[in-house]
Image 1 (tube, one colour):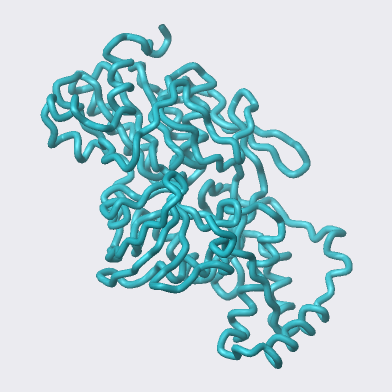
Image 2: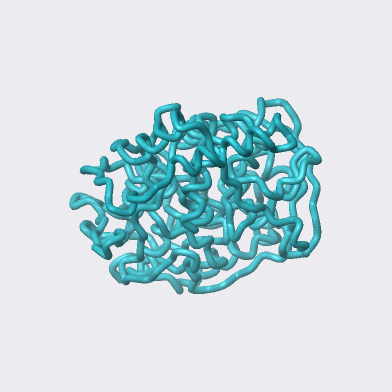
Length: 429
């Protein structure tokens, strides 16, 4: 890729009135809600430390004045735009690329809808990764998936406009739009080194985050989680119960292209496979203090053998769950190394409806493995050759045993082979 394709960071400023409001909002707000990985536990308090000494508000006001008085494109130098740039710049300068970030009010609303299981767009999750706006994963049955958008695709242009130099939130704002309207996006595919231009019709995305089906001609159930939104733990428990009632002898637990979600739902999901009080994840704060998240004391996990499917679109809560099951020896992981999202994000609302997502903790697997920027490495690496239509419960139901055997989804076939061959043991054996 040429250097001109790289997005670059943007900062800005505005008058002392809005700057004071921004600083107060950043420093004094105490509440936050869930996210990816989002934690729903309330902050106990917030202390304005010595690092704030010497913050020169007048310097930012000076820069704002210069920009608004002299920049050649006056339409671009609006106070609102410079305000968002200043907020984004303060977060981006931390270097936690693709994790900590500023969200506009529109992005906050989209985030709320996503956690509730519905939103409007093309149906793909993106993050800033090494300076590029990168697709983490398309959503099941979304327009993006239907058009062949792949994890790892890098956004270059939206409707013919170069995205280089724009922040993550600015690129997302170009992609968002009303359902039924088209958007043309040019991606760079790092696997082939080529650009891919797709016109995608936006739609109302209603997430079906838990689905399951018996794979045709087998007694193996495929249970899939597409995202860790509210209620996923309970829905997975119901799915596993239904599979057991139909005589399932093993579970393929599919976390591919799952970008994550709520931390407490990740713990609940892990509790469907791990024994009561098992450690699911370690949380390490800025002072190096480590705390544990454990399975509930009354958990009643399935004893069926499990193979977990992961790929580079598996991130955050997906990595917490797969890492916990791998450390416990509870499941065999098949697929590709995951995305490598290893921080707990807390959402700090600002007074205008915008918010700051800030990494306040790093998470580790129960055995202390660091996942941030490294990912979870599967026990068996099975890579797919080029774009492949993944076998998921919704598509598996319509297949014959012969069609399943002929699929290009070698990850599902390998998981099936391991379970049918008795390579993966039942829980407790």
